[in-house]
Every structure is written in C-alpha cells, then in structure tokens.
Length: 223
Image (cartoon, rainbow, N blue to C red):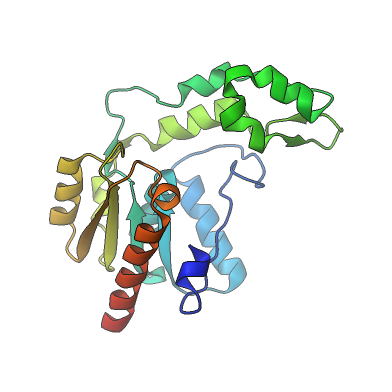
C-alpha cells in the first residue's frame, strides 16, 4: 500500500497496542486505542492526517475522528462495522486454545501449535529470557474483540470529513445492508466494493490501493 500511494502520500503504519511489535497493554478499551493514536500524532508533530484502518483499526480510526474531528482530513474504513457482535458471540474465542507458556526453541513451540501452526508460526518470536512463544496473550485478543462489539453508529456519523467505506463482497464481515446504511447516514461517504473477503488489503491489493488512491486524491482536491 505504501509503495502504491507513493510519492503523493507518506504512510505511517503503527502496530497498535498488543499487536505486532507493540507491547501488551493493561487494557484494550474503546478509549485506549484512540488515545494511542492521539499520542502518536502528537509525538510525530502531526496536526492532522488522513486515517486508514481495517476492521478493528477502522473502528479505532472513526472513533478517533469522532473525538478529534479537526485532526482527520479524510477517513478510509475498510470492513469496519458501525454495529458489531450484538448477539454476544466472539469469533476469536478459538485463540484460547493456543498453547500456553513458551518453549526452549522456536521449532519446539511451533510443534506445540499443531493445527494452528500455519496461522501463527510466523508470529512466534524469542522472549527476553531466551524462550520462544507468541508475542501476545490469547486472552488479550478475546478481550479486545469483546470490547469492540456494540453499537457505534453515533461515532461513525459524528465526523464530517470525506470518507471511503470499503467492503469485501465474498466473505467480508460488513453486511451489504449495513454498508448501504452507513453510506446513507453519513454524508460525504462513498462505497467501494471489492470481490474478495474480509482481508481486502491483502487479497485484492491492487484494487484496494486504487480505490484508496482515487478517494484521497478527490478528498485533497476538495479541501
């Protein structure tokens, strides 16, 4: 994405709390994630920026825009719902079955992963004490998912900057009806649908980048 948006756009891609190389956090609340984004922008001296987020990151982005509208010039929401999981289910609860603890070598921990190895082996890394394991605690993932569930319509409609809503039409988590309602309720929002699943940025990278680039160019021209 960064290469496809260059040289017109500078892309800053933070690892969110508990994700990637970022440390574990004490909580994964709806206030914590946007606060991290505010702190990052302050640290980098960014008065305002266009925000792009996927799934959890998309909800974090539009909730930040709702709280700090003057700091968001444009918003790209890829597969981020305005209401999610109201039935109480948690699709990530399966991670609680991942092996606990660590192992003396990377190979030993990957072996312990069993059927989860194809999905999580790449994340296994060495800890400060020399043992090997996952960079996150499975319960953190479950907690984060549970706290993102709810009705976020007021946050989605709060900001007025131009917005692009991207939906995967073949297995995405954002229902067709909800996507249409998100566009209807929020003026200045356009919809881009890609013939792929939830991971639009990975499985349709060219189409996703083109949709984002076209939208950002129009948003900049209208500013």
